[in-house]
Image 1 (cartoon, rainbow, N blue to C red):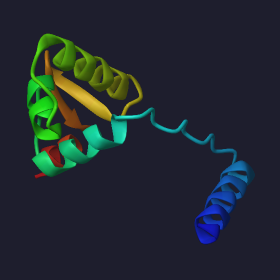
Image 2: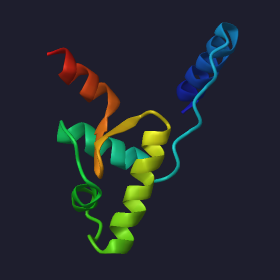
Image 3: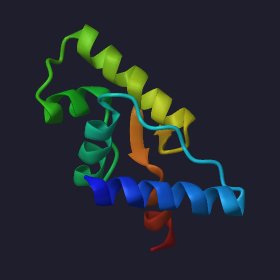
Length: 98
């Protein structure tokens, strides 16, 4: 744990020296969604993400997941190439280059 703290401190110092703002940490549940998106290799809908995470597919679950996906779009981590379909920005850029 101590090495992780030192690494974080180093990154913060280097970013400050270069004038780079640090991104805010992701709220709970968002990392799991990103891991699911990375494993999918393509776009997913909120219901697909719920199924992959073992959540229910009732509206309360899918709407909560959709809200998280929309927040990730707003942060520039995901894109919504068509309504209701979400994908990683990096995947989409890489796919467009091929």
